[in-house]
Length: 422
Image 1 (cartoon, helix red, strand yellow):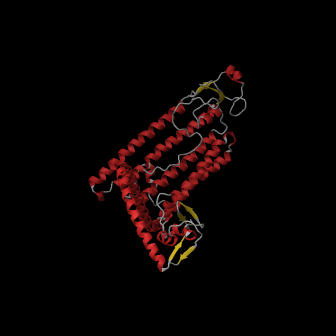
Image 2 (cartoon, helix red, strand yellow; image 1 turned 90 degrees about the vertical axis):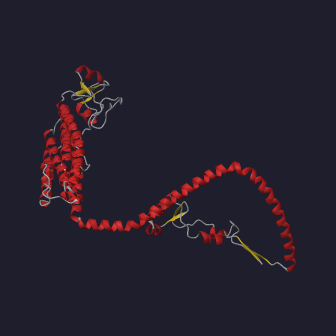
Image 3 (cartoon, helix red, strand yellow; image 1 turned 60 degrees about the horizontal axis):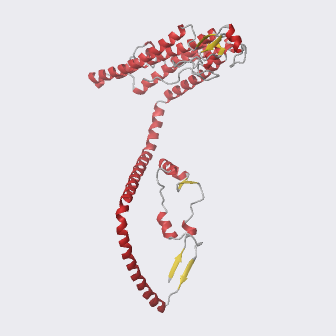
């Protein structure tokens, strides 16, 4: 008795629940059990793992259609003898055909061996690479829970430091945004508001230093090393707090500059931007010096041996010296720009030139005030074009390159938000 089945309804479906891509089911259980492997399989980097492949082969058979029908045929004794004779005849015919095909394959095997070998080598290399990626992903998944546990313990040990760092960083970002908005208001700025902002900035700085008065935060401010050798994470904390608080104090000083140039227009507005830029580059120079006393005390540790500690300290001071020289050059370049009276991207326009151009600024759409004639012969208000060149180097109308490449301008009141840790 023979039975033939077509398992199209059993093994041929691709699944309907959840998200599927490249033949892998992207479900919550896969993410929980092996998150990295599931992500790599879903993105197609790794081949999907199938736990039902053998089962589908056994159940589904080789067919692809038929709706799961089964046919049964009962064979009698005579039919068995007749089928046995037909089977022997078919076997002889197959043997003859196989011999002829071997002759044809022998002639074409030499021409196709190189292509097959090359493709096989590429497939093997790709398989090895995927296997290595899968091993690395599984290794990361094994150490990930323990790493997260260590991170939680580390945060708990330095809980106060984490909260203080997050707080002062958030205040600094918000303070920078407030200062930029006040700078953009120009003549609409209000002196009482600027005074209140300045007092809030200074009160915040004083409060932070008073709260950490026993943590050796004040000594690096005057370029003096801490009294004791700080642990690594405590050294990072000292540097980050000092770096943030110095920027906060500089923002308060910038508010004083904005109060001085409250109703500035034309040449005074350009001077305001240059003053803010000089203050920022002076701040960058001072911030580059701030970590030096802390790391000097950290590296100069006699417990590591005199030779090793002297070598690491000398290397650090050498690296620090190169960065400080760059900051000094930038500061003096900004200082020269402040002392320069002429406009380096044009000149002041005469009355005839202003009348010939229509006496209307294309930026503010008002009558020109302290008009500047650019090198491309277009005329604008000095305060309008000065604000424009804080972000651009080309003419607002013809897009011709007017302003030469020089230092980055901080005339919009912004402060560098990158931490100076080393």
